[in-house]
Image 1 (cartoon, rainbow, N blue to C red):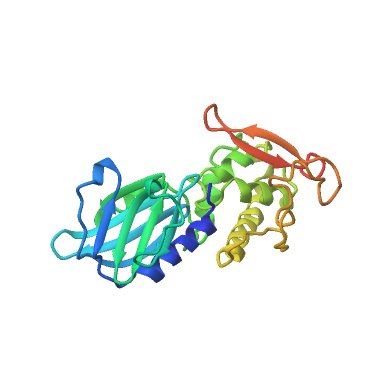
Image 2 (cartoon, helix red, strand yellow; image 1 turned 180 degrees about the vertical axis):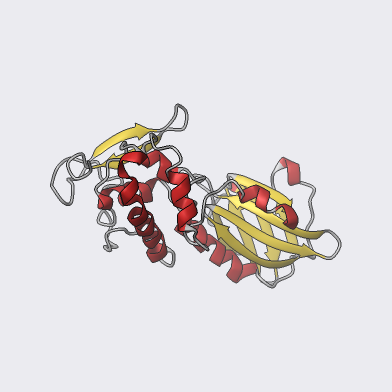
Length: 263
């Protein structure tokens, strides 16, 4: 699933292509919005919040609206020139927004909804502080420590605690912090402030990069400490990286960790 920095870049992409332009084509390919026509609307801009995208459109006749989208596992936004072949099959397109000399296409989007601007908070109000936004560290720590028995890996991935960290960043953050993903939150509460700041730094350093890295090395297979490195030795101790499943039934996530370096 795309992480917060990937979604941040998607927002920047949409902003460059559509902000300040009037829509000449709108095609929302989900049943509930199939008849909606926003042609003539002015795109004010697109913002990211955690893993969510908010494209704000003002229409003289229809009012102020926000197109809320989420990439989920396989979603992406791409910009094309009129007549340019699309990089993904047309049947995967869920949203098409056209303006002068540009076409923005959202492929395989997991969430597509249109909400009045005044109700925008309802789409993201359940989320914790955004690590790449106006971050409230105290609130994030309050949410993280609300359930001291919860495994830290689960707590960090929960977007209701922190918005923006996904499976990859959680694995990497826990490794560089020397913390086992199954460790209860209450046992490491004193280390959480530093961990949260480090997680925010990881996202911030990668938000302008096309290739994510947590090691500082952009070479293939050298970009991460433990994530998807179960066939390679630990970079620190040379031991075997472990892979396990974590989370409630039906919501499990694959976790990567070094049982020697993370306790």
